[in-house]
Image (cartoon, rainbow, N blue to C red; front, side, top):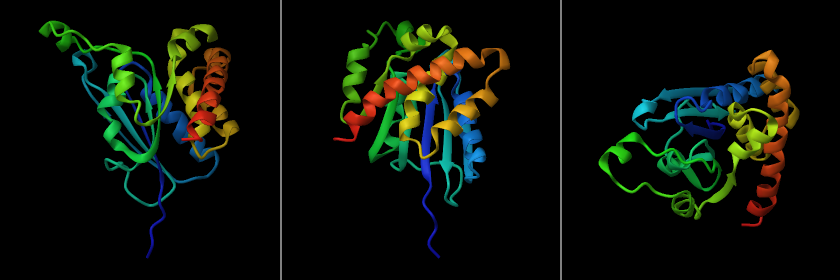
Amino acid sequence: MTREKSFDVMIVGIGGQGTILASNILGSACLLERKPVKGAETHGMAQRGGSVESHIRIGGVFGPLIPPGTADLLIGFDLLVALRYAHYLKPEGIMVVNRQLVVPTSVHMAGTPPPTIEQVAGALAGHRLCLIDAEALAARAGSPLTQNVVMMGAASHFIPLGFESLQSAMERQVPAKTVDVNHRAFELGRAAGKDCESRISTR
């Protein structure tokens, strides 16, 4: 029997960046469209440069964990973490990454010169990459805490779910008093992702 292939999404970041909320938005959107979804999360120690990863598998009948080299989409809330998990992407996979760079405490303590944004972004340049300044867009939306929603808006172009479903799922997952600011963040992210979509589709 042939098993249906899922669309696999990795969401990775540092603790406190909202990766779990982002994965909940994605899962909720799947439920709204009555699509099967499986997921798993791993929490690292953010204060030591650890990461948080969420595996989301839309459709298909495989287990919840995404094997390395098979992810269709990687959403990275930090450049270094995106680089750390880049091996999960399939060769034709897409990366949507925040230009933010959080240097682990261990690097500062060791006295090692930290990498620059340009260096890490350059290391990712071989991928089908959509680089988003989520910090600036979240500030325009009205709250720096909405960077994760900005990223989901940008990534919405590459996810096999309807825009309306993702937006409705976002409304259900964020606190009621923040719906308006998160709406703005989602729309600004979606506009930024649109620019990437046309460029990536030609590669």
